Image (cartoon, rainbow, N blue to C red):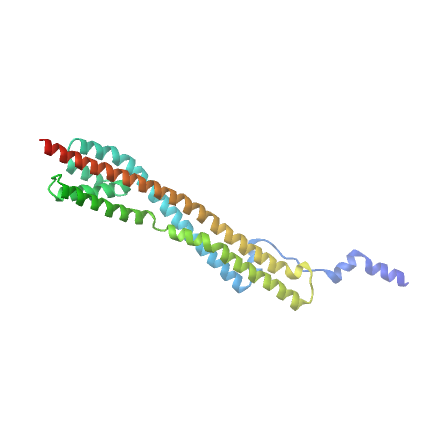
Length: 247
């Protein structure tokens, strides 16, 4: 009789009645419901950071694409106008390509040169060079606008997710202490909460870092193009000065 009762309780189906643990869903909605208030706040912060990062990426992509496209159209046209000695036409070409980084820089030098009466003297060339340097600094700041946001998000998002991980692990241990059990069901909610915040933090950080590195490379390439254009324009002014001296 005793052996029969033991066999009955030893039946896995009956043991499940005593050791049955609550199941935890792993869908996004279930994970959200299993999170504590602090972990939810972490997820909301990471979501805001991801939207902000995406907005900066789209803005910089459109801005750089427009700058590249207009600069390709601007460079040969302004070169042809200057070759024919049409200073006013060169300035008009630059005004029609306001999104071009080259146009902004070259326009500053040409306008300074025209204000000085178009006389290619030493003072005029120096003032035009200073105008070009100021324009390069302004355009460089415009090109880098928003990149600091990507750098900040890329460096801080993993730590925000790690904070959520620590909170989730603490919740898991708290559930073990309050429920007096160490089964997987007691800690599944806290562990899933921890893993979700970690994964979300990395998901936000990785695209931000990749975009920051990409756009930083584009800015450096634009800086080289602006330096070359400024040097070519100064050479043009020097040639004009030498031509007037010869005449």
